[in-house]
Image 1 (tube, rainbow, N blue to C red):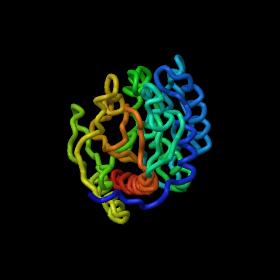
Image 2: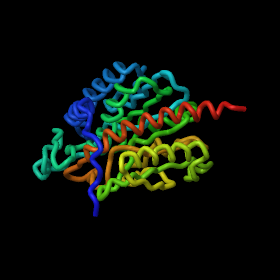
Image 3: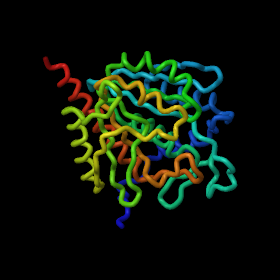
Image 4: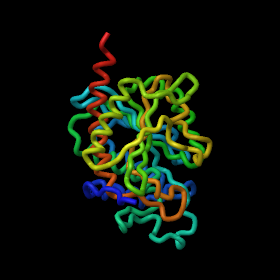
Amino acid sequence: MTDPPRPSPIAPSALRTLEALVAFDTSPGGPDHTACIDWLGNRLRALGFELEVHGAAPGRPLLVAHRNARGLSGHVVFYGHYDVTSPGRPERWRFPPWQLSRAEGRLWGRGVADNKGPLACRLSALEHLDATPAITWLIQGEEECGSDVARAILPGLMPRLEASLWLDETGYHDHEDGTLRLLGRTLGPDGESRPPDRALGSLLDDLRDLAARWGVGVRHECRGLNKSAVQGGCPFNEHLPVGARYLALGVNDSAGHIHGRDESVPEWTFALHAAELEVVFRWADRADRQDKVP
């Protein structure tokens, strides 16, 4: 068994962002949903996003954040969520669930893998990427408890977005050796997973090339993220339009213990995912220009 690569340390801004997010108890019965929304809203506005807040009562709203293109064509839709599952009995955790801990090359705390770590990585990356396509970011607060607001809003919103790419909340590496799982597909008329079209296939090739430069193996899987543990299923995946190019890509690995005790995520994947986002954005520019060719 080989060790996973350690290409680069986590960016300090990503670490600070994740530390702030983990401290909010946004479990179904937690008290910090409003405080977390306010924090996220301020952060997104500072990055140039305009915000819509849907379903503010009972305090777990859906954020729809949009930023116009900055130097690149295309439109990428992000999905994520700021709510987490209950940690159960905190005394049974190795590290305090509402406090970010660093040990053994990993970050520990409730939500670091699902979904606050990926949120922190993407927020931090956008601070340092000058050129981006248009971005719409759907961030909900009820994925772990039924997604009532998202189920009311997303069916009417998502078909109108005309995105170059739909990027799910995260993706996975195998924890044994760091192999990247590229979950890429196009959506058929009944929501079935179909092979990537030519444009999405070229993005997968670009991501393979990047991973190779970082010493990371890759395999492609034609499917979406497994959301079987999500109460009622994932409304983002359920309402993707026909023909949507879908990608699941992110910082998680297979040792994360999502929804369990001692949730964690590897540090080394954060820098790689920031580089992946730059690849995605430049691909979106090319894909948009090609899509517009008669």
